[in-house]
Image (tube, rainbow, N blue to C red; front, side):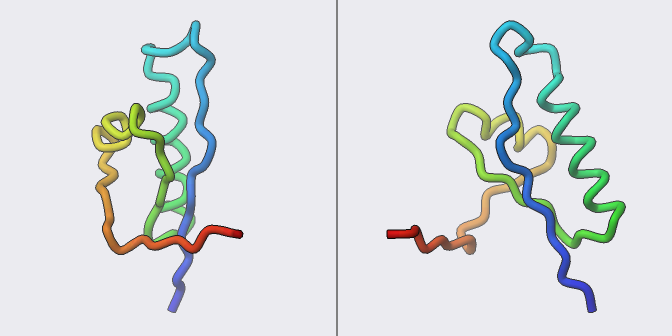
Length: 71
């Protein structure tokens, strides 16, 4: 059984190009590619300002994701 997952990191659109759907298109394409390649889930780590964008793209918050920071 495959447990493959994907993680999208560091999506950035230069300020002059923001608000045109470029970031959303990038995230959507990456998510679709990962799922099409067999990933069971796609995760993203987001700053607060970008959360609504990811929610519009179908991402939801998960309280189960725990992290142990490097000291």
